[in-house]
Image 1 (cartoon, rainbow, N blue to C red):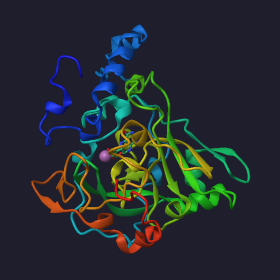
Image 2 (image 1 turned 120 degrees about the horizontal axis):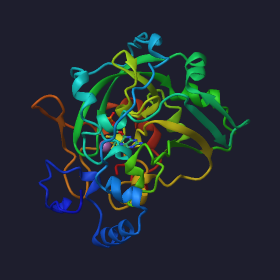
Image 3 (image 1 turned 135 degrees about the vertical axis):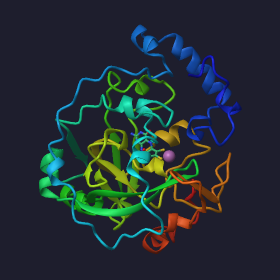
Image 4 (image 1 turned 90 degrees about the horizontal axis):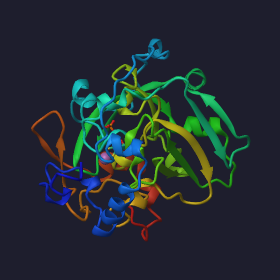
Length: 328
Ligand SMILES: Nc1nc2c(c(=O)[nH]1)N[C@H]1C(S)=C(S)[C@@H](COP(=O)(O)O)O[C@H]1N2
Ligand SMILES: [Mo]
């Protein structure tokens, strides 16, 4: 809660959720004014409280039988995989709250039926149900590092679909330059979406070259199972050379366009979060260093690597973009 708690900028950096604390005083004031005008239901839920709800048991995941899937041995790690229970209990998913403890609230998200809209600059706009997509493009397993802009990291076994295969399946027009990915919009289930501080639904984007890079991955599972809701079920992006906020969760829309999209974090904090968000230990965030990362689930700190260690695969994408802010 913002009200009744010390302001977020008073919290020591190690405890803060840095992505939530960039707001300047003016944004804070107008948000407070907005809060007063909110509908009673949102006020009751607590604008910043994201009160927990009673969740009806959800039917079993129809894709459960697909997993585990075959591991692609091309993607290896320099560290152990983060234990599953740790990953399941430490998440960023602002739709369900700004703490890391949103797992329980996220269980309210219905993940079937689930369709993904494919639109914009494509040969033929259409919708596809997640289970049909999984039949058309069977998932594989990949071990990836995951580096949040807040200077923590994990390592995980995703299962999913190479984004380049999804792009081919979507059949974009040659004139498309960007892919825009969006999360569901359902404030009845996701209280966080009642917050006027963010431009919901959560929106992210990649260039076509990024989206068709071998590393870009649409995760539909992890740890040999369908994706847990708190991790972005039933389908989320994993672009491991970028800060975690690029890896948009619970995707319902994939749109191709020739204009660079405005992302949720760029809109909320343009001085701190950009479109590119490539990991770089030498470029500090305005409020903290990116040189090191806390390895979640251990007491270790490791030096952060340029492009999170994936430079060999992706550095070429940016070689002619010196004028861009590639590392925020
Ligand atoms: N829709 C949505 N996607 C999101 C976020 C979010 O708040 N909402 N948080 C991002 C951030 S900041 C990170 S670090 C990762 C966290 O993924 P994880 O909880 O699986 O570690 O998801 C990203 N995708
Ligand atoms: Mo993040």
